[in-house]
Image 1 (cartoon, rainbow, N blue to C red):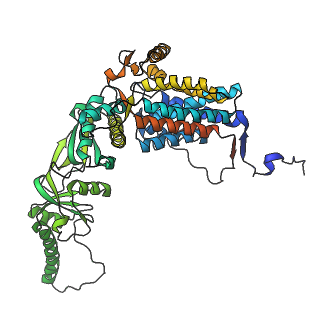
Image 2 (cartoon, rainbow, N blue to C red; image 1 turned 180 degrees about the vertical axis):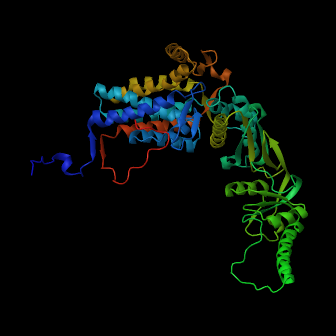
Image 3 (cartoon, rainbow, N blue to C red; image 1 turned 180 degrees about the horizontal axis):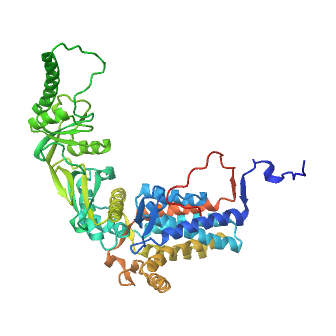
Amino acid sequence: MGFQMQPYGIQTMLKEGHKHLSGLDEAVLKNIDACKQLSTITRTSLGPNGMNKMVINHLDKLFVTNDAATIVNELEVQHPAAKILVLASKSQQEEIGDGANLTISFAGELLQNAEELIRMGLHPSEIISGYIKAINKTVEILEQLVEKGSENIDVRNKDQVIRRMKAAVASKQFGQEDILCSLVADACIQVCPKNPANFNVDNVRVVKLLGGGLHNSAVVRGMVLKSDAVGSIKQVEKAKVAVFVSGVDTSATETKGTVLIHSAEQLENYSKTEEAKVEELIKAVADSGAKVIVSGAAIGEMALHFCERYKLMVLKISSKFELRRFCRTTGSVAMLKLSQPNPDDLGHVDSITVEEIGGVRVTIAKNEEGGNSVATVVLRGSTDSILDDLERAIDDGVNTYKAMCRDSRIVPGAAATEIELARRVKEFSYKETGLDQYAIAKFAESFELVPRTLAENAGLNEMEIISSLYAEHASGNSKVGIDLEEGVCKDISILDVWDLYITKFFALKYAVDAACTVLRVDQIIMAKPAGGPKRDQPAGMDED
């Protein structure tokens, strides 16, 4: 038996194969580094001139987008500290639907500044207490920057809606925001319920059809299904609709039975009874006044034959979510089995037509009057990835609409708010005594991330821009931001660039929470990974 070294210290406590990192250099700075890497990825896509990222996920699907939420979702971040930032951006995406990029980039910037402070010799807990003081002060200042009179909004007034939505959509699709905003505003206003706080994002659908260009896009009141009608009847006006979940077909009996048939007549009569039964069912539906049958499953040949005979239009919607939305659009009640429907269960449509758009047959169910329950934006574009990106921009617009239904206050956009916050928080740090004043000053500097990135992405000289912004704000013009097209600083109330207060509020809050969580970690202890077969490498990846 050879001489074995006895384990000592923490190794005696844990199973072998564990990893243990502690102390500033190993744990804290490594975590900060991982978060910085993540925020460097998203930072270049911040703002209207943001660059696109090409992300290929583990299923070999290609994403070309500058939407931070999509990027970090598809990246499958492994590092535990960077995961915290991803979670913060996800909660921002779910809460507001826009501003995920600001969350990640700002948290990364805060951590980078924290790293400098740690190297200067500050303790992480002092940095955290400074950051928390600073964010409380920031929230106070943010409330003072709210534009006067913006708290009451008529959510059905298209101009007011577009004003608040423009920045969110422009950050995804710069240059096309006017077309997109008016589409989104129309769709949202159509489906907005009497009490705007109950606005449901799911009621604005997006259908992507290849071909054409963005200017061919339109808003349809009602639903657009990407399928053809089943029978030969392709157009119905002002009709009642019956919806059956389980399909329109002869139902097999529950019990199994054997039938002995002696002669050909008996066989004929046997199959005739089946026909008569189906006819009876279809006739019952036709007699109830329905002209359209929507089925959730397959439609039998014989049933289809009788539907044609009674001049019923037949649609098949296989996805049950689509079926639910269709019921919402038409106001019908889905029935389980094929039987005579009650008059109350029938829905109503103004028109159902099958049209061909760009080589794809789509069924358009319109409901102009009442029942403003679902609106569909039909998007046209040249490639799938462009369409996906347009859909994300629309998604952001709709989410912004929902947020403004809850809280419609706005603050100046185009980095005007950030510079003003930086200036005021910096002043606040001079009044503080104690070591956290350094952290507060660094927090104020972190706000420069936004104007710096906007200027960088637009190819302007960031130092010049930031110093002239500071100069303008110091002389009291708190609404001066960057005009990206001309590359100069302008009053943004002329440019009409506004951000929602609630988006900024949550993005900064989540970013600080995430940064403080990462800073509070001082040891990383990883147990030995569970044994078991090694999984294959995901497709599209190589060894290194």
